Structures are given as C-alpha cells and as structure tokens.
Image (tube, rainbow, N blue to C red):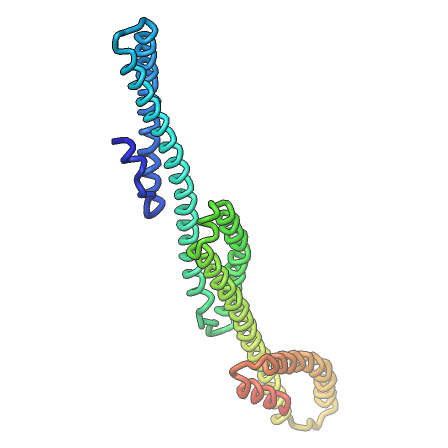
Length: 281
C-alpha cells in the first residue's frame, strides 16, 4: 500500500496542491517513525528466537530478511519522493512568483500606456508627479525580477534548463523592456505637454501685457501742460525696463517652442503659429 503511494507520479499542479502533498508526505514520515520502533522490536524478537534455536529459525530468518529489505526499499522510495516533492515545490513557487510578476507587469503596462497627458498645466503637473512615482516603482522592481532569475538557477537542472522556465524568464524580460520603454515615452510626452502649457501660459501673459500697452499708446494724447507731459515722459521711461523684462519671457517662449518642435511635438503648427504671433507683436 505504501509503496504504491510513494511511487506516485503526482507532484502537484500548482503551489496549493504541492503544499497539500508535502503535508501528506510529512504525515507519512511521522507514521513511519512511529512504526519503526514496532518494526525493530519484531526483528529483535525474531533474532532472539533464532538464538534460542527455534524449530522455525530458517523461516524466521527469511522473514526477517524479507521485511528488512521491504523496509529499506520503503525508506528509499520515501527519500526519493520527498526529494522530488521538494524540487516540485521549488518549481511551483517559481511559477507562482512569475505569475505575480506578470500580473504586476500587466497593471503597470495599462498605466504607462495611458494617453492621458492632462488638460491644463495643473492636471499635467499632477500626472508628472504620479508618473515619477510609477517610474521609481518600476526601477525598484528590477531586483524582484533578478531574484526570480536566482530562483531559476536554484532549481534542479532538468527544471532550470527546461523550455517552460527559460521561456517564462525571457517573456518577463521582454515585457519589462516594453514597460521601461513605454515609461520613457510617457515621461517625454508629459514633459512636452507641460512645456506646451507653460509656453502658452507665458505667451498669454506676454500678449496681455502687450494689449495693455497698445491700448495705452493708442489712447494717449499729447498733453498741453508741462506737468502732464512730465508724467507721460516718466511712464515712457518706466516702459523700457518693463519691455526688457517681457523680452526675457518672450525668449523663454521661443526656447520652449524650438525645443518642442525639435522633439517632433504633434502640435508643431499650433506652436509655430503662437511663436510667430508673439514675436510679430
């Protein structure tokens, strides 16, 4: 009965089933340990009978030898099955950990594949911060994948070099590369979008200032009184440093516009139009 159990080819289909089989094997180990004393006692009794020249000594000797051989065979089968169950447990643990990594990878892929880059400067800044956290998580996850490689190396050679294990590792590496590349592209897209909103914001502020000054210049009348003329002259004198300050903002707009166009931003025409409009004014 026990030989049949120990000769089974069932090593579980997953981590849950292998834990159950290991638990059964431990119970059998306890049973063998419990029966060992009884076995040794029976052997001793038989040897004592042989020593006393019992008339059935020859049969007793044969019986003892037969039982010892069966017991030794049982112990060998026990050791072999225990070893194979433990090896299968390592494989199932590897597969379970690989499943966890695949599940994480799938969730992360959905996040870094998003086309949402925000609808204004504030929302995009929020997305940039979230993406930074995601990128840090992805970078730190590299060590978990490295640990999976170490787990694979610790497997018995027949498992470690199997197509199943090697294809699992290569598949995870490919998906991680994909995640890393999508992370880089999303970071660039968010940075470009944030720069675009900043450019438009700066351009709007410059145009607002230009509108105010144009309105003042268009509505200005040459005063007849000297003191009124001095007031206007003073305002003209203060206009120059204001224009220098605004020129710096215009330069920032132009710098951002050139960078976005260089990066091949999809809104290139709109960016160029805004840049030309501001420079013309």
